[in-house]
Image (cartoon, rainbow, N blue to C red; front, side, top):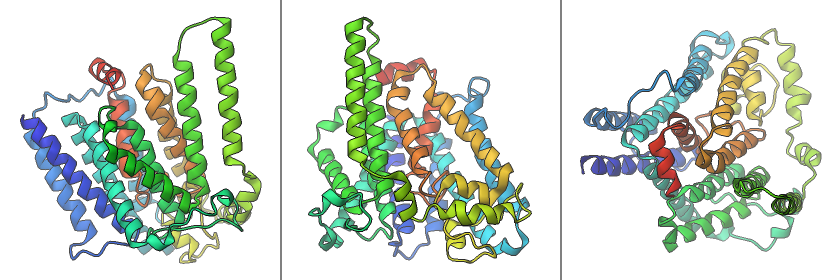
Length: 410
């Protein structure tokens, strides 16, 4: 009974924390208390919950969970080293701002992660996240209802002819990322809860607003997610035989064909239109000629680079991998690459069917969207407050029999 109450409190606290982060990151935060203070209050309250829970619910399995702790250490190490040691002297103030934002983000994620593990509250986290994003989407839809327009949906992939709406989210891709995250969360909800009609209403709103955003990165990511999810369902059937094999091949062929038709997009043209080729034409040469190849130009925000607040003419670095390389150099890139490899290894090559079929597709589309946005482990991306907790939670419990049995029931 005690833990049930604490789970509910945790869910409520995370709901309001996520609401505040969404409002802040979309430029809609208008409350007298600062967003930073809200994060501090959240950290304190969650810490109190952790102190009040017994250690029986979750033991620290250091020897069995080396990858879990290594990923956390790599993310912290990257932020601390490039926020305090490998600082470009000409960008001290901008680096300090980035460091404070990023270290606060990691603390919030880690305290949320540990509460999720200690309370076994992954279902609560997913539900709270789904409700939080859904509430914001519906409020912004009502406040900006005049932007709703699906009449030009056939041209959604055309830069010249498509209609785009952001519904007060600041940027179309920010809205697209929030909608994509909500749709993905819907697939993780408890099956029993999915009978609730309000869940389908929230899902429909997310799909409609995603289409209105015309965010090609989010739309293609959703198509990719559905393909990987469907393929996982097909190959989950372990029965053998020529007929069954032929059936699988036909299904895979149909899915791939539908995917190619769905995206119907010239990748090279899309990259050119969105000016993402500038990263390779301008930013990379600047980086290579800077004399700071190992430590990077400076760990500052993409906005600072894009609005020429730095001495370097890089333009916008709308690619998470290129951003990490250019801002933190080869050394920083290798640290983040190590974290990515461990995530793929532990989630993609696990023996846990639930993780492979549900969590791995999320990881893939997350890494995919990082090709178009600077959202790789970045505090400025809404879904990172959710995805990172989910990834690390399931890595922690990868081989836990209780979790395996629990997920079989879902």
